[in-house]
Length: 517
Image 1 (cartoon, rainbow, N blue to C red):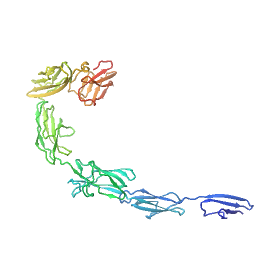
Image 2: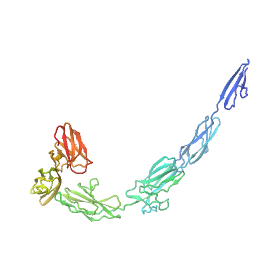
Image 3: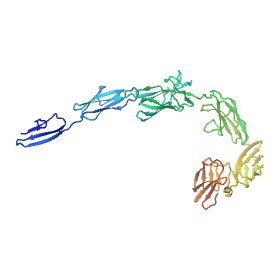
């Protein structure tokens, strides 16, 4: 037989109910031999739980919060008992409040933990049409829908916030489920010509809270469990526009281009609305109904009547009218100034001429019996002429104006053209070909430039049989080299001339192994 003795004094083979620690057992057999063994009893960590918010409440006074008990130690199975009476580890559909849970593990150990669901806040109210512009919501003043409302700020933890919504048909809006935060509201996408009402003029629940012309409020701070439905925005239409644009008269037939039509006059004045009236005259060379895409505004035409001045083609005119402070114009009826072709004055000739060079200017044929009267200016030889074609030269450089009158069957048509007379060697020594000012493409030998005149970009079309590079030099009319380009032909290249001032420029083209053009 064996004799057993534990360090606790027990003499049984099994020792139980032991605390954590080291224990030894001494065993003696029948022969008196002794053996000693040591064992360590470990300690299980105590059961612990942590209650957490899985989903916060999404709206003010809402009941959609979710909480859960997380187990950090202990032996399962685990049992849960919430202060709500629920027995699941996770509980949902909860309103704001504190929630306790008791967790029991498989050994009967218990742990207690709790969690709080906060009630978020809400802010909002109404955007309305403040018809009497007094900054207060009065009976009969309706809401404005589809207004953009933007919330920008920081929550209590310093996290950025950016939320947007649009007002409902009745003008109401709401930002719900907000944390504690500081932010600004901005109202935008207003109806045309609407502006904000005076701010903070009375009861905070009914007055307008927008303090800036850009539609923003001041800084707003809000904590938890707050319902602030007092942030309003009043809007009113700053434009009391006309309702009738009036009528104009002045339809006219002109026998040929270059004639000066009579004025277009008001027959019936514009009416409706209040405030000063603004006018804007429009013109078009295309017939048909008024179309803003094909009509051109006439600068400095804020007058009830308009005198067009000489025209070369049939032109249509319309008068647009609005009240001061309004955006939209109302257009009235259309007046047409029709240009016929009994006599047509068209000048043909070069746009650039060298001093003392004799060049030819001609007029288009205006028919049998037509007479022509030229005026080339006092520095020209001859200064005037009465033939259809004239050889002329100028003795001084500068911009010269040519005028032509063509008369036939009692109809006189006029035209004018400016030419540049130069003594620049970069132009005059290269024997460059000139071209008709009215053409849209200019040929310099085999080099074509278009469009000419140009506002910014000039296309240079090189000859198709060109071999080798081309050097293009751009000169002013006084001979100053402004830019140099190198191109490889054959090709069409685009030059950017947008940095140049308006005026006349000379392009010198030098081909490989060839003379300049």
